[in-house]
Length: 403
Image 1 (cartoon, rainbow, N blue to C red):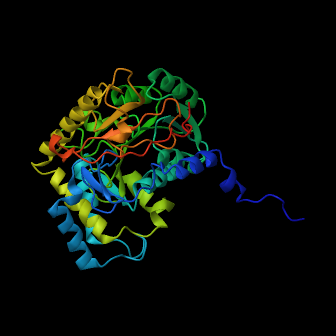
Image 2 (image 1 turned 180 degrees about the vertical axis):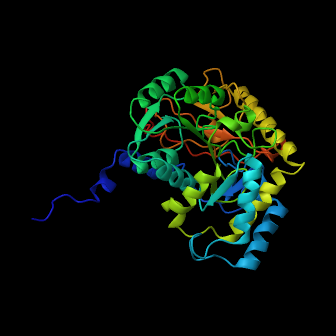
């Protein structure tokens, strides 16, 4: 007997369909806006200049001539694409150079380059974890971490965001699960803007015999003396087992990597389906990432990193001056977290009228969701003048993060 359930019904009746229709009719949808120029502190969006506060172009290297030349050189030598996986015909000398230099930068034995950052997390967690293992994850971790945990079919024990007491309880429970245990956290949390308490997390993991993996996507190229991320910043590089990073932020390209011990990287190289069964990144992306990494590791790197954190503080102070409730964190990051409601004393008007391209997650709570803005090396007081946006912004959608 044929089924009476249409598998596509969910696409018409999902819980946010009504909200989506309403904001589209009002011309207020904040997502999928069209950019018609290069990434920068001010962008051309749908025919008008807009201040860009949602980009992850932290060091402003997407427009650097050395990075663009790295992409051009790779394009000219290897063509537009490699049309195959890394396993068969998709590995070129640039991959090997990039992996070697990433490992040196992270201070580990080896690194493995993936086509995207999402695949780096999914491919690592979905391979190194297995049924019978337990993964303990911060509820604020990136979606790609959650996807990798679910793919692995390991037991998932989430703990409330940055709550070390909750982490300890979950580790105690995980010790009774009977398998290996991995703690995985973001170094800098992508929406909250705060930094993981890595020394305490490593100590708790060590007490329970657990391994630790840190997603350094928003910290690599920004935090630490050489820009190697939160593990370097806190002096716990030798206590973090695996470190993931991406090329789509400070390294001005697209792709991702995992860095760690030789045996683990070799295992992933041979077993990770997300690595084996996808096309290799286009040569231009690899060339650009390698050129950007060399800038970060050069004497110029510390100056760029200091500038982006200075600009994040400048942005934070300016938003507070507008009357916004800015969330303060113990450790500075390039991300600035603000409340959605304007402070009652502010005479300046809704921030959405001035800075329309700040980031607000579609998974944020309607009542407590907080737009996240980003500072960049190339953001200066002189570059923050632009025509205001007059479109109202809708409330954020319900949260999908674990409690």
